[in-house]
Amino acid sequence: MCYELCVMRMTFNIPEKVAKEFQFLVSPGDRSGLLTGLLQIELARRRGDLIRACQAASSDADVEKVVKEWQGFDEKVEGELW
Image 1 (cartoon, rainbow, N blue to C red):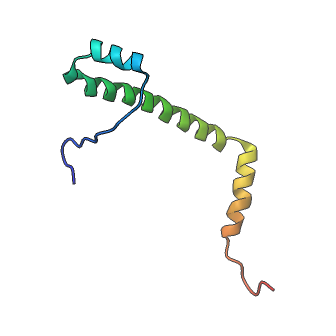
Image 2 (cartoon, rainbow, N blue to C red; image 1 turned 30 degrees about the vertical axis):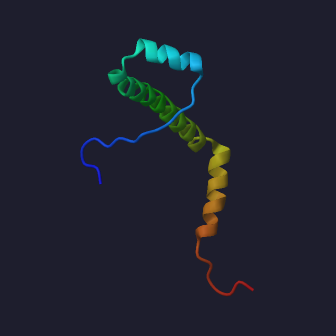
């Protein structure tokens, strides 16, 4: 179990031109931090996109109707079914 800083080694395939420029412009000690920061920015953007899409779906009247129909299947049926 990790209580402080947990790290995970990952391997990515990127275009050679980008990799060479990255190696040239970013010192070895700064590479993981730079990539982590860039990933955090992109993940936050995507998380926001997902939240907005869920909110839009939740406010859609057609979606609400379908959800209510499906929730009806959760109700307990009394008596014999046949």
